Amino acid sequence: MPESVLHIPERSDEMQEIIGYVPHWVIRWGVSIIFIALAIILMTSVMIQYPDTLTAKALINAREQPQKITWYTTDPEISYESKVKDAQNVIVGDTLVIENDQKTNIITPITAKVSGRTYLLKGVENKPKAWMLLVVPKVSNYEVQLRLPVHGAGKVKKGQRVLVKLDAYPQDEFGFLEGEITEMVPVSIDNYYRANVKLTNGLITNVGKTLPIQPLLQGSAEVMLDDKRISSRIFGTLF
Image (cartoon, rainbow, N blue to C red; front, side, top):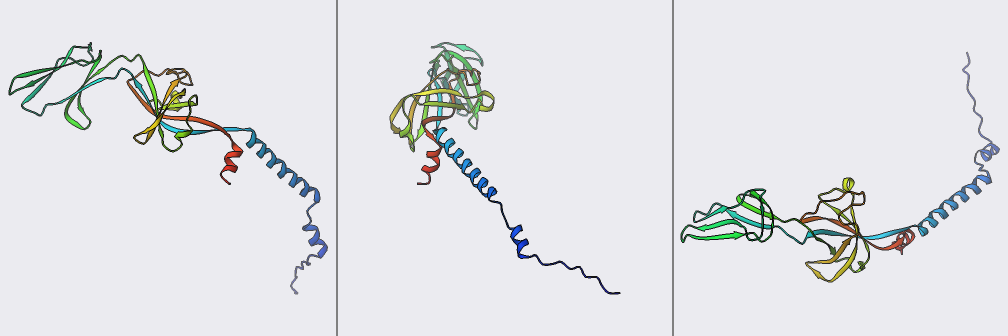
């Protein structure tokens, strides 16, 4: 029985032309759509302004700072005796610790320099034999200071907006504090420039949470420098 052979005719030139043909309206509309998309992107980049920022370290210092007393119990010739208990309220002049020299029987009282609440701690800063007594005053006022990196510090000016994010209070839960630059110290100290900030709403964050006043709070800050259009950022890096 003869084998059947499937014959596939070769494509003619006309068929090839039809398959490879792209209608002119497709080309025209495709070019038009691309042109419109590029025009929208360009217009958007020109219209939208994006602030240039500078990141700095932020410190919120209370004007009333704690008093700290540290002593060790390893010296047999000197003994120390705490005259206050933990969580006790003291006022300026109260005796906190007695230092007694066993050789000459000299007693030296250490008195409170500030009024506040006491915190008696044992084993601090990887020193298990050390004792520390803190007198933490009630904070009534504070100041906010930024430590700016040398690179870019010249762009910082009075009146610029500042966003402060504190390490102890994560931004995703507590939000951030808002303020503005009030003064720029024109001298580099320890490889930093310093600027003072006034908080717009005090210690109330942008989400309405009030943070407790503490002797020291640390975090980071973003200084909003001059606004730049997105187009200047894009094309400025190309030329």
